[in-house]
Image (cartoon, rainbow, N blue to C red; front, side):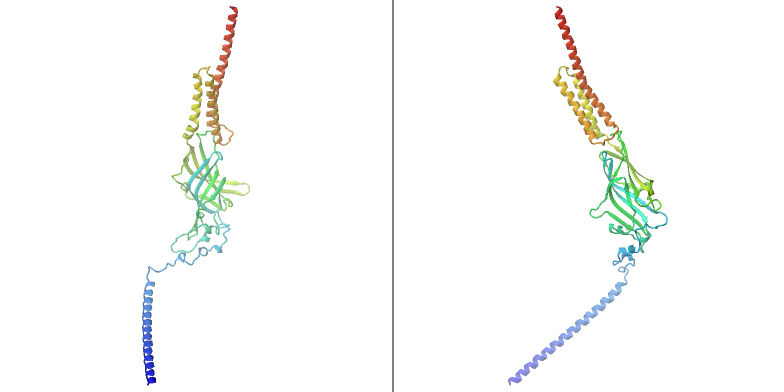
Length: 381
């Protein structure tokens, strides 16, 4: 009896398990069919969207994400140690400049410091690339080291550097037809020969000269790209001692006996000195010292403690003014306009002291004669 009951329980349990497994199998099959229908629907929608003009990618290879710029420009396929068109006519290189600031003008060192944007324009067919949109590509200074660029330098420069904050201020822009724009931001300190014979009423003319170091006019033709319009200046440029009158550009040929003729570009600017500072610091004090030395003429000649310190003080003050002016000037071998004024003033002050000495001496001699004359008269009586 117990055995029959156990068999009945086992049959019931096995039947329930079979129904559960069958039910789970039907659910999995229904889920698979539903997922298959969804994927089929998505594929149909994706095929419809692929024909949409909005999502269609441009065939322009310049916009391909996997294309490297060096491969597009074929940098490794050419020898960029040679100039473009080597063996043919000179390559034209246009230049334009935008002056950012004119920092300092030094009379002692006879130089000036200028910050500018220097841009070069030329055509190198080796850098041409196919493009459907005719759009250019812009690079930083890393590509500049791999291609040919003009070897410009500043003639008579003392110091110069390319700005590197926060990275090298160098830009290279390449167009599909091979035209190249090369721009860099430079600060240069260059020599300026000054004529100080009319100082501080002088006007100075300085120039920044640009030239190719290696290529003569047979290989590289350097020119201002837009003539006189190639030079742009910031309207906010100003100097404490000078008024900038004008900027202009010129082009000349420079000859070196060992290498030949080179194209040279000139940026010339004219500076007129402000006189008001020197009126306050030099001319007015010197004039007042001369007038102060004349005060001694109205002091009694017998007041020695009053006249002597006054004369010595004015002489020492004039010496200090002359020394201060010459300390800020170069040691030139010619006479400047301010030297003439200061030394004439010094002579006036010095003569006022000599005048008192002469008056005092003549007064003493006169008094001695009068005393001798009185003594003689007393003896006769």
